Length: 87
Image (cartoon, rainbow, N blue to C red; front, side, top):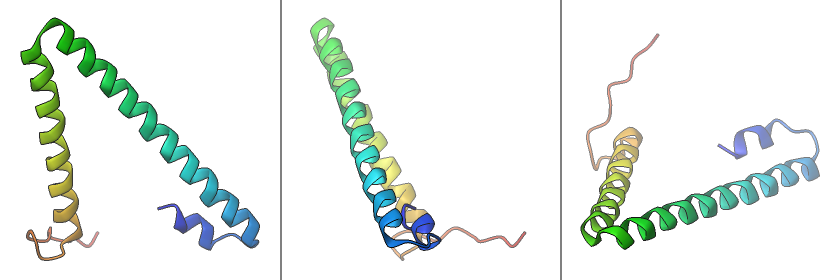
């Protein structure tokens, strides 16, 4: 998605700046998300080891689900491709 606006820009330096800002923003957002998730798991584990494990397992199952959805939407043969509708 980051490359679509870059192809519409007239100057290369502006495009490279956009890509750099996008990369820094995505990395920062993922870092903050991981930090919040780690704090939540740590707090849950302090009160109950069972809840800590459930949270970690839920995150793992969610990640697998998102990955399966992405593969399904891509339709690369691993899972059946979704039916495409013409509107």
